[in-house]
Length: 543
Image (cartoon, rainbow, N blue to C red):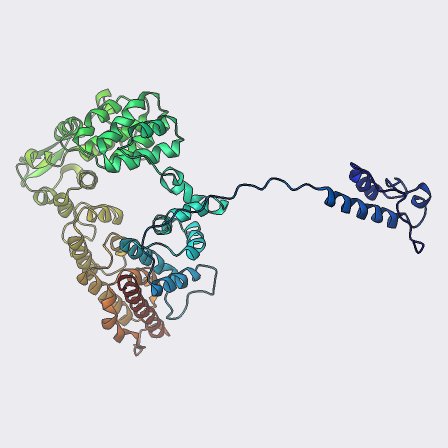
């Protein structure tokens, strides 16, 4: 064999491990199986070992029997929705390709395409289009990186996205986000299947089922919950109880009254909050009586004044109705108890209690002994909880009032919540007036509660305020948040009016160096983005 040593006999079955051991220890210490002792003692032993391993490898491969093939996945279900128009499909691919990390930083006048994806998805979902199958992986990747996109992406991607998510661990969030992990939930017309899933399903499936049934049939969902309520864990009862916020009505009161005696403090607090959102409930009446006994008109002063006598104790009945006895650090007990009583009392309590006055008149009254802030803050929370626009208007006050916080609101967050109880047109008009009087420095949070696209008065107020800031000669960076909102929320028709602002202005004597050029670049990006949004809408609405 040309002098090359070969195994004296082929290794038998089960000897692969011996070959591996010989290779690890060395042929001087271990004779490989199937190699003669004479060969293993010489310099050709390593070659003989490799030859023996090659023979064994061939033998092992030739002797393998094919295993049983695994069952392939079931094909994805058909999506019955209409296909995207071709131009809209190309636009979607462009938006998805602009994901963070795929290019350089955001500079110049180029639009931020990824920030336009939410609007594109919203319009596509309104039109009822199905996602092109080839875009599903990119859509799921985008939703994986941005939780705010997930509801719209999953609605657009449809059942095929859930089918894909079962095959890729990176996309399992889609199964967690979908009701029942992507399974088809039984409806009110399937009582036996519904009750089986409710009694035997996983916690996430039960939450999804209860939420889905509640959205269709509030009474059936409540009965479902009541059937197993005594045996549920406290943390599960809390989650289930929260589902009653959807479609909350007077028929829920008996169940919620029963939950006031729950052994869990958090469950009791949630039940009390829900009952106080029903102004006609017995709990609301009890809280109204307690709050009314603490607040009265004082006619002994020069002008009618509200007097406040906060509670001196938190008795067991108050605790049962949801009043938390221990205040947070730095808060007085009596003011803490008063705020909770007023917050839970029906707002209809106060005109009768305070001389038949309107909410505007009540809010304008002086309050004795420095109780004004506490009382008005509690009324703010009550107006938001009870969705009362009349009280919200009174507490917001005029948008141009010198006190930017309004007569009752204590923070921008409170004002934003109060605005949320008003209609869209009224909300936009109030924020426009606020911007005209106070500028954009405090308006960002308020703009976030306004409907998109912004109504014409609001859009004009924002553009005018940006123009004033530009003429002042400062850099635009402090307004980058508002500018970003404008790119997403201004009506695209505003692009025509903004065109004049894309030119570089003459720099004033006190202007920051180069500020005019930065402003021109920002307005150019705004105009380009608005025109792109108009094109996107046209692609999705025209055949």
